Length: 251
Ligand code: CA
Image (cartoon, rainbow, N blue to C red; front, top):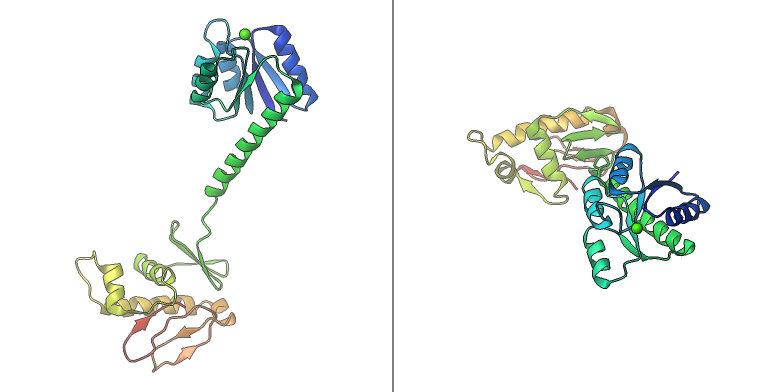
């Protein structure tokens, strides 16, 4: 049920707006002034607000500014004040729409529906953004850089920080070939100690961790090794060491 708060001090108008809303399947709440409106906003789950401008005490403009500090639901002014400057002001305070009284039911509902749908779309987009990251997928391997997590066939592979950095760097540069000096420069450059030979050690550990996984072998991932060891078929994931020189890549 979509809850809509009507802020209106004239009972004849709020009754009419309530009827329009109920007729369209919405659940209306009525507040007669700013104080009541703020109270309802905090105590009920309100999905949209229809707001009069001329209210006893604090006016609708001021209330709109306060509402915007606590909610991002659609706010539609319904006002008899029709000066252009009022409309500009109302929208400038964060209202989503400005309707002119006297209101027609069909027009009110059409505007409300439109604003609610924009709001839902924005919410859905925000929700999508906050979903867990998809990461980089190479065959059955998923690398999630934000979580620093590597998943192979739905199972987490435990990697050290540098092993992860190395795998992630290669995965984000597919089909590029790097020497161990280049990889050392990329991944260990800020370390005060270390030497390029450490790259070989880490590559070998990575290779062992990923190769040891039985699914890796079953899914035909290609893993190129140094000429001495040849290569093993393991999928679309590969490290190439095509010659005596150590060169690494993921293709
Ligand atoms: Ca009024």
